[in-house]
Length: 150
Image (cartoon, rainbow, N blue to C red):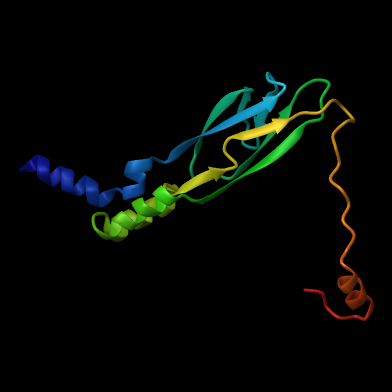
């Protein structure tokens, strides 16, 4: 009987997504060429290819660099995962408000993107630049007329 009470209490105290997905995730970092240095905005380092274990709720950036190549920085964001939303919804049946609060606080419903991070490093000074896009003619005309452009 005590075991059942403890098990029921654990289910009520922990959020469904927290239990099923955990509070950390793996973010893979790859580069061409390989063996590049990776440094996150929170100070963790590795060499490509590598996998970073990070808290699901954390957004951060990674800078990939290698001698003789231009470095690249990629921002890693979070979004609600399909399975995370299902786990969060499971709180209605099992975890209740406590489970919902736990899932929201731990970020258990989130996933990182892009994942994997896959960059191509270019030799120093050879990184292609994105094309410059001219503003649309209507936007230029409205700006010249003092009309706010939305």
